[in-house]
Image (cartoon, rainbow, N blue to C red):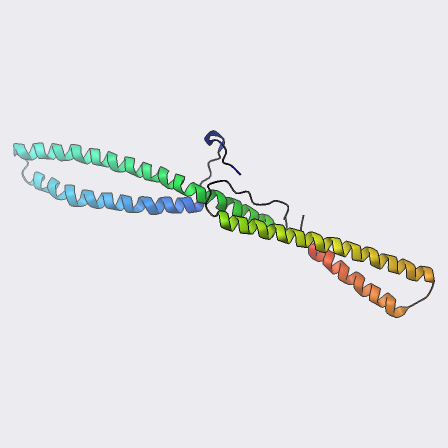
Length: 195
């Protein structure tokens, strides 16, 4: 499956993307606070000790301008890191979202839809293995359902033949009743699956 054009893509932020976003922004924020605390706080205290000194006033204004520009740079860097984090984890979030959707469908007994994998997504091997497993399970369930249907028809014909012969064979009738109950059990077990 190829990726749709960027203007047709849906914006979905998976919880794992939010986690990586927080894990990338928190250290950046802590480092910037530590940088300001170590670099500017002692210099500001030093300048404030000598308030009448012309050089202290110039140094204070220079420190203020540098501090403002650094805060803007840190804020811009945080925005860039947030955007890059979302973009970098997008190839992981899409398959995770589809895997969750398939898991919910499997839990509900729906096996009719395969897993669609986009070109360039991460987790392609896991998704391909899951798709193969779903296809195999769907085939086995369809085969079981078909065989149960054929067995039920065979039991019906045997019942009709026994009735037409007019002979009462209690052992055969009992065996047919047990077979019918087993077939009912198979149909009950397969009922939740919508193939």
